[in-house]
Image (cartoon, rainbow, N blue to C red; front, side, top):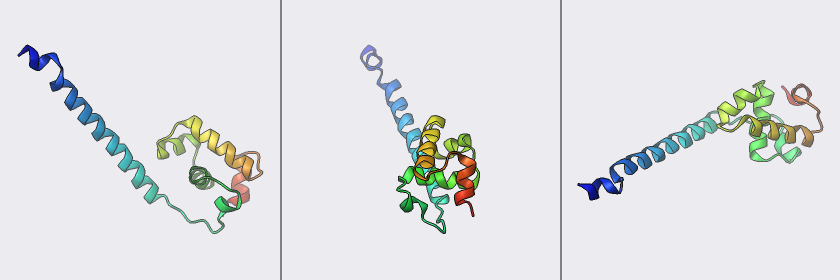
Length: 107
């Protein structure tokens, strides 16, 4: 009995299994979000301004009018990461802020 409980397998195996299950659910949610929110813009600004895939996803959401908090929640990334990518997008597209970006590329 001591050998069975001594190595904590009854505790660690369910925890590891649950962790893998939760990570899988997060990945599926992220994939479904990307499928649902794949937009084709009339103008391919990603190629024009050499945006990365992530910068392009954030640029599309900025054009839609989403806040940085909402973008970070939708994309399952940190708020500071969204701000950094948005800053890169603004630098690459020669605008100074979100409002100018929306004016330049909005529909």
